Every structure is written in structure tokens, then in C-alpha cells.
Image 1 (tube, rainbow, N blue to C red):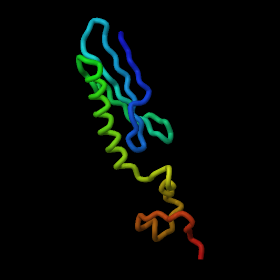
Image 2 (image 1 turned 180 degrees about the vertical axis):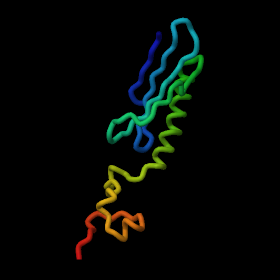
Image 3 (image 1 turned 30 degrees about the vertical axis):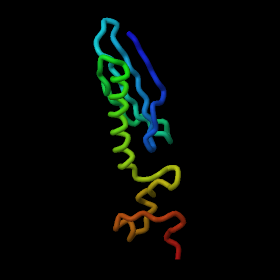
Length: 114
């Protein structure tokens, strides 16, 4: 089996895109798997099996990168906070009574002091 792996193809916001392309020895198409990792935690967030499927290696790789880029862009839009510039949303128990009832978190440095 032929195998080509590239560690990093691109960065889309908070996510990195990696791919692995394989081709069976008897011919057949190139199959490329795309991996999307969180840049902060390095955890694998999503795997796209057979994201690229083509007779030519570069066509397969490009299709996988494009598919992964679309998923990473959607994940960026859904992200609730920026770990580089802000704190994560506070846990439910750290909210004041009125704010918790309204579903509003406290800003940093604010609390229930009088």
C-alpha cells in the first residue's frame, strides 16, 4: 500500500488540518482521510474518512482539505470563546442568582460582593 502523510496542511482559526492519503497496490483511487485538531489542546476534534477520493493523489488531497476546511470553518463559528484572549464561560454555580436565572455569566472580576 502506498501511503503519504503530511502533518499540517493549514490552520483555520482555532483548528489545524492534517491528511493521510493511501492507495492500494492493485490500483484503485487515492483515499485521503482528513483530521481536524484543536490548536490549543492538540486534541482530535473530527475525522473525515474518505474525504478525498480520486485517481490522482493531488486531487484526492485537495478534496479532503476543502472538506476539512468547511468543517473547521463551521466549528470556528460555533466556538463560544477565544482561549487566547478571554476566559471560558463560568460554570453555572459561579453565577449570581439573578444572572443565573437570566442565563447571563459574570464578567471577570465581578462577583456577589457589596
